[in-house]
Length: 328
Image (tube, rainbow, N blue to C red; front, side):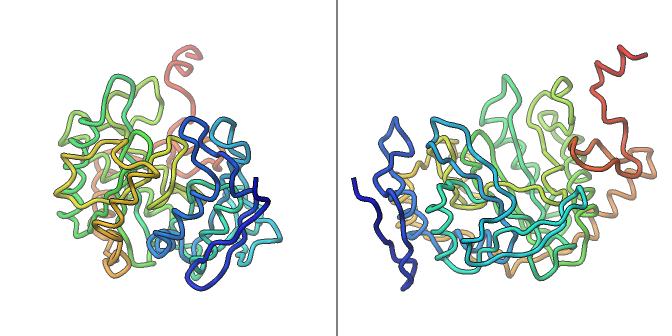
């Protein structure tokens, strides 16, 4: 077994230790093959994480073990940025700036890439709205496709361009680039308003935060809170599937497992980088925020935040409904 090798990220050699290490035992896929994936689609993968604080989700024992999450970057990282977490504690995170940085993540046993939805140039204003569609128990990918059509229509109505991709697990992610003018709080509330509008139009859509109340396709508005991360485009997931961008006219033919680490090579050869142009499509959040104001006027306020965030103004009780009933 080779102790190390090097791969070229453009013209830059990146060291890969233990290249023959098996990361996916069932398929026999190795650490070197993970690195080669990110060399192949490096420009597209970099577009998703460029200049964004990025968490390291390290699969040190391969997908047979549990991942190890590192928000604070090792000193060996080439580029870093100082951030403030929701707890108000400071930290220093990895900051990818070149394709070699994406390949370095593979060297660190990262499979999927987990960036913030804000850039280091303005850490207080998100430049990306993220819509995460996840099926609840008893619902399949056909339900995800159904709700994704609704989200596309809504985004078009409010002047935003939706860029869809498979999540690499069971769902679909839809991103919309924004001008860097709105806070994380505003972007999250705007996503919640969009999700609630989807609920009104599509019985399969739900914004119910508590799992005991969910049925259908959950639209996770909290993915837009500060410090939340999602697997970005071209990430390899623990499933072995690649988080694959696609065109809207491909939506009805999508399946969760359509592109894995090996079959994705042909996909890349055929269509190239379908995220090209996303940065030039930055939109305006004004209409979505008008919907927030409309909901507030109708008595529909904020929804629960994740448990480790400070209590937010106007937030409902952060207690499971069944537990609230027991307390009463």
